[in-house]
Length: 494
Ligand SMILES: *[C@@H]1O[C@H](CO)[C@@H](O)[C@H](O)[C@H]1NC(C)=O
Ligand SMILES: *[C@@H]1O[C@H](CO)[C@@H](O)[C@H](O)[C@H]1NC(C)=O
Ligand SMILES: *[C@@H]1O[C@H](CO)[C@@H](O)[C@H](O)[C@H]1NC(C)=O
Ligand SMILES: *[C@@H]1O[C@H](CO)[C@@H](O)[C@H](O)[C@H]1NC(C)=O
Ligand SMILES: *[C@@H]1O[C@H](CO)[C@@H](O)[C@H](O)[C@H]1NC(C)=O
Ligand SMILES: *[C@H]1O[C@@H](CO)[C@H](O)[C@@H](O)[C@@H]1NC(C)=O
Image (tube, rainbow, N blue to C red):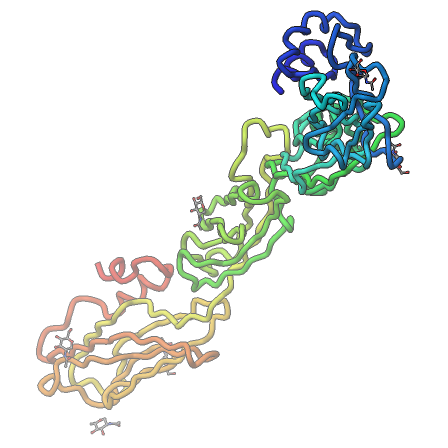
């Protein structure tokens, strides 16, 4: 079998060579025979090339004649066909050596049949020729359409890829004979998707034909067609769909939802407290949608902003405490920008965008504040009831500036006027008690919940001692014009 395949390749003819022992002897002579002519030898088998078209619609089809050149036509020779297919698919006319195909053949199922022939002289019962092998080839017709075998096809290409970018190669196969005309020569084209993609007609390579923006459309279904017969008349075709997804590039900058935000913070809020959220959106996805917020204009250095990595929101926090009485509102500017910026995407809008934030500080009703952390009064024993002992003073720092009411509880000896003046309500006797330690309470008249207290120490001086040299009022005059927040006690005391 090897030898006929080998020969037919060398000769470039689809011919089967008899391969029995005798063939060796004829080889050189036979090679010189013009293609298609009868192969004559001095003594031996004679036959044409045997071809049978596939898919023949006639039931019985003559495909050639096999003869011994010793056959003189006196009907004494008998031809026989042997091998797989002999007697059913093929048969031979005993007398003439005519070979017939009895049924429709399918080249794609079996493209050649190897049979053996015998010729016997019926008068002697002896073989006239050595038994010989020959081949019947089935000729191709274009009866198979191209098929895409690897469906479904899916490919991914970055958005904004330039024209010509490779996307995917899809190939169809055609069961017809690639050596037979154009039956298996395919030509690819696009039936759907030509606006954005192209296909190389001979290779099936799909390329980008125009830039696509993932933020507008993130996937495309295209339909590719393969036609055999290089698309000419009689061509069969097959189609496949290809899903092309666009991957994201960082071509969008984050943009604030609003150009202006209004936040409020209580003056009682501790440093680090979250006071609000601001939101920007980025049309990209994944890492490309990650952003960083920052505070841009904040001379007061009061606010901070961090990014919530889960929600991509900007969380505005208090860097230090605020005081309504000092500054009741702030205007700051915040910025947001892409966290990841690739060098080659500078062309796109990746710079930051910004927004204004107005922060309103809310006043909190705070308890009244005494001007000193404690008071020490000195008084001579024996002073009459209702004598002046000293003055305490508390103020409401809130905007409302509520009037203050003072009180002393659990003391039978002292009382306090609404203006803070402490008086005695009983005789003081140093021999009974040299010290009275009191607690004076200040209450806001407008909100009795707002209360604070201060310790007051009253020292009773001996009447027989010489008079003290210091003023009883010294605290008051220093503190009158002092500001809240200063270390009043010490500046007064020293
Ligand atoms: C046999 O008949 C079919 C259907 O009519 C046709 O398509 C096919 O080409 C015919 N075969 C040949 C070899 O003519
Ligand atoms: C027919 O011819 C062959 C070969 O020439 C010969 O051997 C044979 O005897 C002949 N038979 C008859 C019946 O004449
Ligand atoms: C968010 O991620 C960035 C970078 O990984 C990090 O610097 C930042 O601290 C994170 N923010 C929070 C609130 O965890
Ligand atoms: C405080 O009030 C009392 C009683 O009304 C009054 O006698 C006293 O003079 C007041 N003192 C001052 C400093 O106003
Ligand atoms: C009152 O306060 C003074 C000064 O702090 C102290 O020396 C004295 O022991 C106190 N007396 C009482 C009864 O708490
Ligand atoms: C204050 O004065 C003494 C002595 O004069 C009296 O004994 C007290 O009763 C008086 N107290 C009051 C509250 O008037």
